[in-house]
Image 1 (cartoon, rainbow over the protein chains, first blue to last red):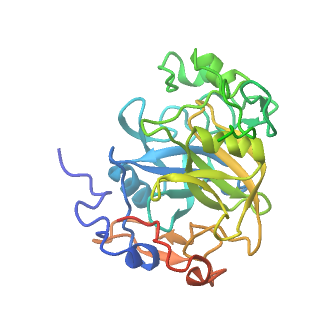
Image 2 (image 1 turned 135 degrees about the horizontal axis):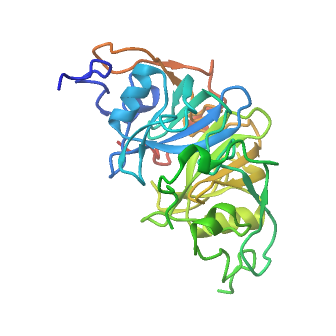
Length: 166
Length: 166
């Protein structure tokens, strides 16, 4: 198979030489964790709402930069994951940021279709707030923050395995 | 030493029994990773800007819920970390969210003092954007997004070790 020219083969990232270079430098030198992943916060470019926290491996990060569409590494399916391949809810990247020590990515995106990003059917994966306060003698209570789901997961995903793991 | 009554001793979180309960239930049942940590996205409650990605252990999560001030687990210092203890840049929690499979937290906060949250001195840890586009033959270039630092790290942290690790 011919190499995919959309992803550069070598020197995609700078080496991490010094703390000063990582924090103040102007070349992307990401730090992947022991599993080869970097966490990625994805927010709605219009509303600022946090949609999801995903993970990227080196290839997903390179493909996101090269194509301007969000790619992740699916930890449940253990494969490269172009967001929206199944659901058509593609995430167009408006801006990508990297943090101080370059071990976290922030994507600001525009979502296609219904604008939802959560496999449960909600717009955001963060559709429940946690009640704050003192000790109550039991687990903190959650409150649903979205009045209804944006789509029916059964219609979109059919019988595909649920990615949530216990 | 007497137990700290601000944190409940037992049953702080619900057990994770079924996927449906985790995704649709109304009791907090967080999933900590192999290191006992859960990632936490922290955004500015006023602007929506992502300030940082931190990590919480069970105690940090419980203390954040109980006190309404953001607590994290410092991976570099390996200790519980009440944000602002050194810098006075305390994060008051306006809202806490949990995601679909309950393995990520989102905090919306109001930051005290200068409003900054980054040890390098910037408001947000995500003070650099990544240039998108096709292959360039080298690492992606970064662009500084904040015109100046909010504080001088040397004045605030003195000779404390830099948390960035290579």
